[in-house]
Length: 423
Image 1 (cartoon, helix red, strand yellow):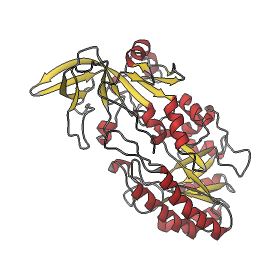
Image 2 (cartoon, helix red, strand yellow):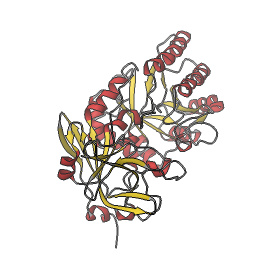
Image 3 (cartoon, one colour):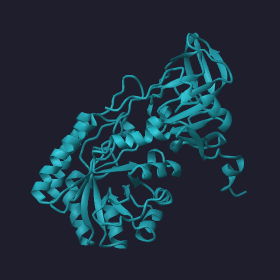
Image 4 (tube, one colour):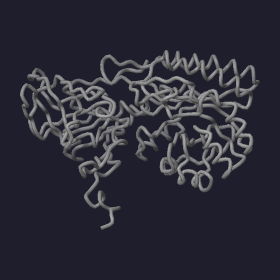
């Protein structure tokens, strides 16, 4: 099992470098990523035939290049994510047709930009999540190979908002429509070579294993045309002491056992892909922010930061927990029960809340204006879900590799913020 990232409420270093030094050099709010942790998490998955990174979790091109150099393929969900993958060095097509597709576009629709790009300049492999995608690709680019994303009829995840299976989910082709989808593909000479299932993010081994059973049924129904199966992503990472990893060896064994049986029936090998995003980058990432006000409101003590949900929206959107530390707090310093919030003109701009908006307190060292707060496990869906709400600039990003910090995204300026506005 992977070793949990150690994080106390007095964490003052990131990948061996003082958070205070990083803040002085690059400013706050600041996202910082540990390259070694990303490489470690990719290595954890080496038992799978293909590791395909779901770049929506964190798609800075420097991070993508690091992941490509570590041997992973990549998943894209938009035209611009395809362009990011190409900019990071992945080829559009594999040199050997038996090799994994370097880039796969997975979605439930084609917007016009994505369809034009895939039918023209960048003919990447498509994982179709709807009948209309099959139809639209078939009209524009008949004869291609595709895979089908199947909704198995059930889902699971750390939040209802991250559940991607079942009849209340928009994702995937309904499992009962699989053969109809294959027939539609055949009408356009689209060759279905694989199947994909993903039921949600942050789920557990029991529910992940149930995907394997559903995929086994789909694979038998689809027949020997199937050469690759993707078990999707959803691997959990521990955000707190109670969180656990999935037993990857056992998860791989369950899948491999089923796929080996399918391979015997169809008399050819079946490649097993896994498609994690969060698992690869979440624990590598930290957000550093500065306390700008300490205030008492009745019986509550607030630390108000220069970072808000415009920088890290997960607590507001999902009630997600992130470990929080006051950097540089001395051992033995007094502690207090604190509500941690941001600068935005929204009551919901609180980092210490549960799903549903219920505010909770954290036990943190006593602090004052100018002290730094560090959020852990912030590498997935942190910067990527940021916004310019309240005309706040996007944060800078830094990658630490071999002990050296490198700026990989400049902090937004006013000119950047208004560059596309016409007035």
